[in-house]
View 1 (cartoon, rainbow, N blue to C red):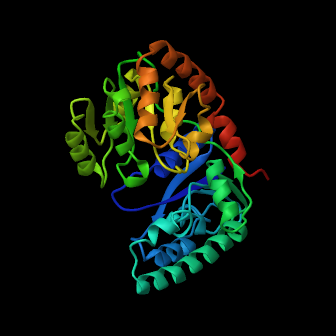
View 2 (view 1 turned 180 degrees about the vertical axis):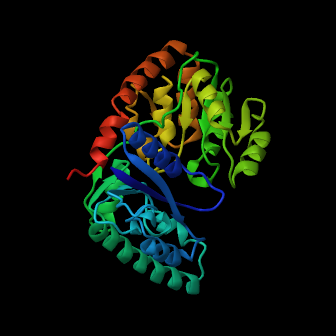
View 3 (view 1 turned 60 degrees about the horizontal axis):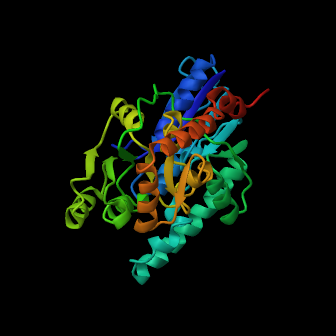
Length: 347
């Protein structure tokens, strides 16, 4: 089959949805299909209408040699606006500011801005509902969290299909002393919980490396200095795939304190590296994958609770290894051949 894999992406950014899209491309090629990755525009906030229209007008029905494209697989907004008679959407998320993050989004708005955004929100809801129910042949989501949001905002039915870890040379070298966190450094990821946890009485012997870059980078580094934990919390900045695999292979466990995450590929990447995951009970996707006390620990989103969870694994290497073994078994249940089989529309 000739398949177009489509996702949208802002300039100079490499989000998890792009990693997932590339993993799908790789898995489809491994299965013998001819595949191309199409990246449609995602304009700056407030100009998304043009991005939706541009995607709607993008011709994904024919290849350069005038042969037909047999199927389309799309991901996040507005990539699912692409038109094709055989269109599977594996949804990461819609524009969250107009859905589950609306109450947070409108806090700083003045009355004129609020009126404008309410109008935009109503339009986006209507357009998304049409596209996801009329423009898409089959709709999957990457987590129960996304399926629940679709049900809450629009009563749109969908099926959960958890992604496996991206194809990388994961390994487990040891269960070292240092915890590891990797994420974009933004408020919703709540990396400050890790920094504050290391300042709690239970966390004063815990060390952690935090990888990633983003708007909160300087804030987090300043917080670590203010709390006196900058000697135990390392900030690695952006890292490449080789460094990611190395840190996963040697850490004690992975810490992922994010709020209402769409999925969080780092969870299954930790599983593939035989490492337990500490996540928060309100973490969304990670909290779906981690059974408390089996593949890791689910804690309250507070520094004290996170410190206790980290201390539990810091003080018991054997427990970290047992949970890591359980995590590996859970990860092995998610395979790319099974996933691709679900994503392909049969004639």
